[in-house]
Amino acid sequence: MIMGPNDANIVGNVHGGIILKMIEEAGCIVSTRHCNTQNGDRCLAVLVRVEKTEFLSPVFIGEVTHVTAEITYTSKHSLEVQVKVMAENVLTGALKLANKAALWYVPCSLQNVDKILEVPPIKYTSAEQEKEGRTRYDAQKLERLETKARIEEVVPLLPNPVCFSQSSLIHLVGPSDCTLHDYVQGGESTLFFVISSMKIEGCTCTNTQSSWGLK
Image (cartoon, rainbow, N blue to C red; front, side, top):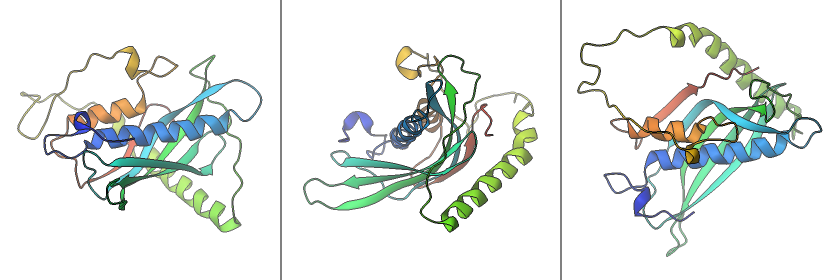
């Protein structure tokens, strides 16, 4: 995809939220395709957790982004997807790694959004690769359980809910923001999050998760 002026932030670089949306969509495509290789209910893979995303190099207007996504681990009800974003200068042919991310998806039935389907296993290149994937899965599961109570805590409202260190964004959700389940796409939610942030370029975001649990 070639980056245009509409993709830029106030600094002139491609907005971090645009990159995150492409990452989420790439992960959704490969996960949904994989989960529908088996018989049974048709499903859509939904984003439930952003394990980590790293902005390594800025992407500029006029550059072409190449997004690659690979399923690197599957549990009974979830998939780990590793995504890389390369930026190409079409004038010089120069390529750079702009972003890399790790995300988790779960397949939800198109007939019943509350029904999480089983994930067909992938073929690993070695037993070591499967072992490393299992280690990552167990680590994120433990961290998720440890932080669940904190996430569910009710944060008291400040006297002035928008102060110098905060930003507020109001967005009317439309059909183009939604999945086949009529829920807002994970990539759109991430885009809103980045837009409302004070600073995003050159930072690392970790451990963002949704209300769908990983099984």
